[in-house]
Image 1 (tube, rainbow, N blue to C red):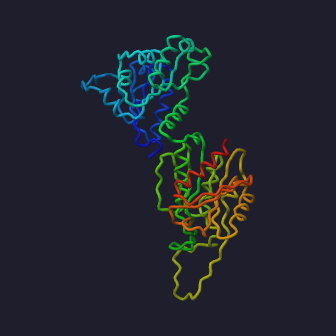
Image 2: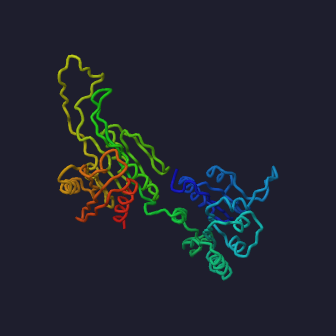
Image 3: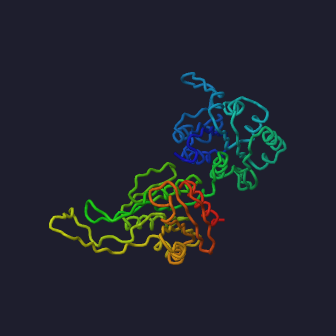
Length: 402
């Protein structure tokens, strides 16, 4: 599932050189979980093949009123009822004129005239056509009919002239689509690395040193970041959780050293790193190859050695513009210990919670946090469901991107 899971979108493609950009837009929509039906004008097929689009969408492309081989009728009325949104990108001057004046001589315009859903168009044409009074008049007519115009950009055009007429970039169109469905898009283009859950440090093949972390908080943050458009890498210890958003790439790690190896690789080019995992501070110096038997052993002594500090390691190599977020679960001197983490690990903020707060400990579906910032500010929140807590945390992170 993704941010557009369950959404039905008609993607209209017309006969312009910008049709190649529609492939990227289609990929973004499908990756976000949308079900997309491509409808092309006959001229559109001269620029991009229906085979390519059908392979990406998983649906046969609709272009004609009837199938040439079977005589099957393609119902524009059914498409209009099925869709939640119609997007035409690129929209040529010819198609814009036909839409504005109700000239239903192809499947795409007929589908538009049957559309009950919101319609967006992304014009693409040469600068003289874009500036022509008839085009300007037709766009105003469509706007008055409720069509949303995604303004073209200025730049070099197919004619090699420079001016306004380039179809907006697919990523920008995708942002507008996501926003239309009520989702935030403030992390599109950002890579976020998140650690979650416990680490298990083996004593022998059947025993380990670990903690009670379930990973619920880290998973909630991962889902929130992915829902806002981020590329998310979730590095998690042994947990019984599954991700929902298809924009999350999950990497499993058992112990602290495995987790560090993954994080160092992924955090190198990330924009944001969130260290929510409850990493074991120590591990047994050695791990027995076979199960330790208690017979003949009145006592057992484990020699423990210190594990690497993942947040501190990334903090030492922090790059300009990166935002690093730590977590502090404390039992006493909470604020002092959290501020110490910020300084010692070169973090931008720390999310603090206390075991003394009921409902804010391991294994719960709720949390009560205070966010402490490196600039000295802090924000306290009431007890909330962890998914809502994740929104508060990500809002705080995004505020530092501005």
